[in-house]
Amino acid sequence: MRVKGDWILWTPAPFEDRPAVELPEDFYLRELMELPADDIEGAARMMAAYGPLFGADRDDLSFANEDVYFEVQDIPEADSEQQPYPFGVHRDLVAIYVRTAQAAITTWLACQREGGLEELVRPHVTEETLADLRTQTQDHKPPWPQSLEELQELLIDAELTSLQEVLNRALGRFSIGIGDLSDRYPTVYSVAFLQLYNHLVEGATVHHCANERCGRAFVRQRGRAAYRQHRTTGVKYCSRECARAQAQRELRRRRKQEASNP
Image 1 (cartoon, rainbow, N blue to C red):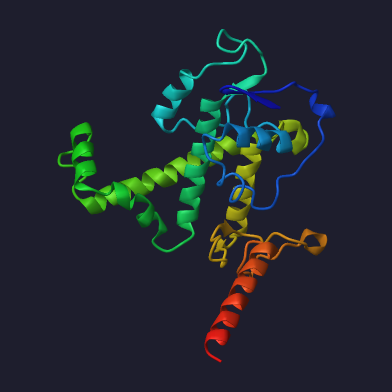
Image 2 (tube, rainbow, N blue to C red):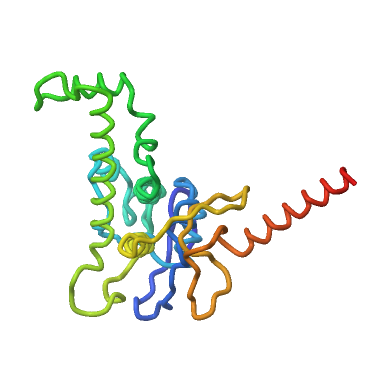
């Protein structure tokens, strides 16, 4: 796996010769959400560690947003004039997958807190957006939407529909069929959304790390755990490291306060 200009390139190996790897717990909430969409080096490291980020056929990518479809059509392909080497992916396609995933995960996280969806769409609930939508709409009796409240409902519905579409496309590799899951050629993208789907099914609680310098969303605390039974309840920190760092920070504060108030 190597980066050359705007391309991630690799030397292919037979699928049966590739070692099996597992994504870490909460991968979609941590590594995937924390990967900048334009970080081609970071994406290459992720692919080197866990395998293909997405499928060459792009069947797992949602085109619910028409702009995404047209963006993809303009992206150079490997084994072409722009990139003669046949095994590679352009940074723009990587960025589209990362942005699509992060937008869907952001919507999922908004669903986990009271008023989260309203907060998510609030920047777009404006008179300007309302006016723009009214001028573009011809299938409803004007004025439509009739109010900012109706606009908010429409935007929330659009976010939920997009999340559902992204999930369905990403999970397509795991639909009913003959053979085990390894025969479906899973990708980092598809398995990350399988993690999200499993959390959805189990009704998992999303926590936020109490370490004041972290605050990341998590379901299972990372760290040493017997038989991989990672704790999901009664946890304040996303990892043992965060818990230790916050404890040391608070200890230093207490000692400083005690020293200033003998």
